[in-house]
Length: 177
Image 1: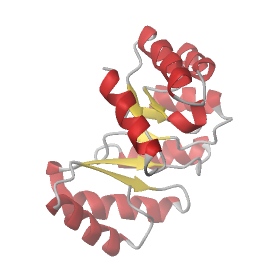
Image 2: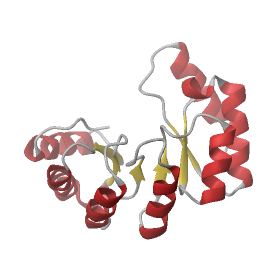
Image 3: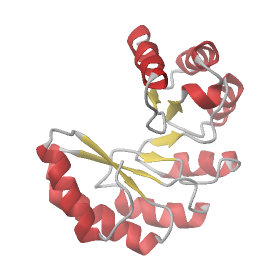
Image 4: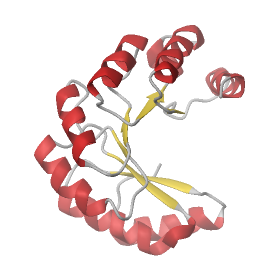
């Protein structure tokens, strides 16, 4: 994940991460749409096609702003994570319908029930699972099972934990497809 900085600083950081071997960079967006677009353009130009770029809106956009700006980013990004507030499930469903880029549900998903709702409404193309917000491995496993039953791919997130939380996340990933 790349913190929000000036486009030039982010491009410089992106090159350094590319040189370290990173194959996917997540650009934080959601505060100032015009500036977000400049940052994404700078990062993508800096890394080219060798590194995938996705954006994480952190619930910062409204539906109209998300449609306008994410559409302009679509040829540069591989995915868009939670651009709308967690409570705007219908907005996410509409956004998923109008975007070509996969829409990733993150903060809105904290249970198997949430996964089922997003699947039913087609409000995301990918579900981000997090052990902490779900309440541990067993409840996250239930959410994964629901996602798999609906054909929804999953990613895993964590908020960058350390120690036992990292170990638990690695164990969960190793034990599941």
